[in-house]
Image (tube, rainbow, N blue to C red; front, side, top):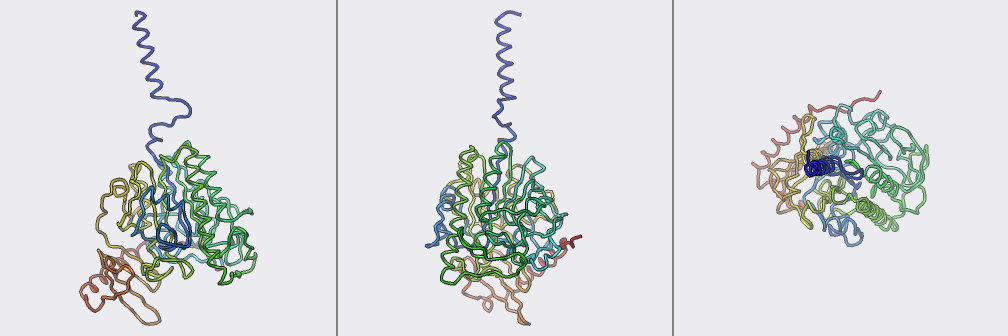
Length: 450
């Protein structure tokens, strides 16, 4: 072989080798096409609870910036009007009634119940495709160790399993210490909100060279109402919480939301520092509406209600360069849509059965409208169904049954009951609701702990 031919062969070989192997700091093509996912969930934050949704007293510059750089939803809904049901829907991609988690898994006596291990969680789904998953904060899908998130697909868990803890002492509402590293009960100093942020930052840095799913379920602004420098309000072995005076509560509440926003800003700064800001999808929402201390943006009802104030919540999606900036989405999206959406983004489908959520990927990336579908909310004694612009609310209380009909497109505050004017629509929606309740009743029930 002539010298020139040998030189050409060597050059071609060198190019081929560099294209296939790269250097030690480069990711494979497969890793580059898989975005990281960060899902941040506030607790009891109402539709009007942050400044980019119209709040005039609470300052949330980092969430506001996220909204101006991404998509802000005006018709996003939690699956439940309280904590556990929404989280069950998020984890499984289905109506929580199918999992048996239709109400709060209470702390009383630390009930031996939880999300069945037979359910396939979002972390288990993503693990199939090479994702490392971490959850830092609130689980609330089972107290016993056998229901711990570290046994349901998450590679790392730090936080609490109850509905809420003292922000400093980490004691739940029944007086039990509740701060875990995976399945081990631990003691750790720190303000809950700041610890959740710290864990999230550490996780990002540790997993920056591989695809990851980071779930940050914050406690804020759920009770007990405590700021960074406030006193402990709970003691171990005592099922009692000291409540701050009514005059100081607004300032404490404001601080709790603003500290959470500060932490979210630190998460974004970490993404930029690690070079992951262009390959990470961040989604923020609340688990249900606010209670009487929060702001539901003029909507009817509060936390626990199937009126809009109980489940229409703030939500923002961010993916710079991929999602158009400053978009306001009016499409109806539910928490259960997150699982199929994330899988669709990486070209996969859910492996679980009876998935009720739909992928909103095409809406996020190109603004495509979502298909028409009926939506349902249900809790003990109260139900609601939405079909098109119509919403029927059914409430049974102390032997009384009240049915209301609203045109949500024209009356989002649900002030005008149209029950008497559209009897055929009432009958149609009642039938849809009853058929749905029968269908989801066949789902897996909450299992008993061993």
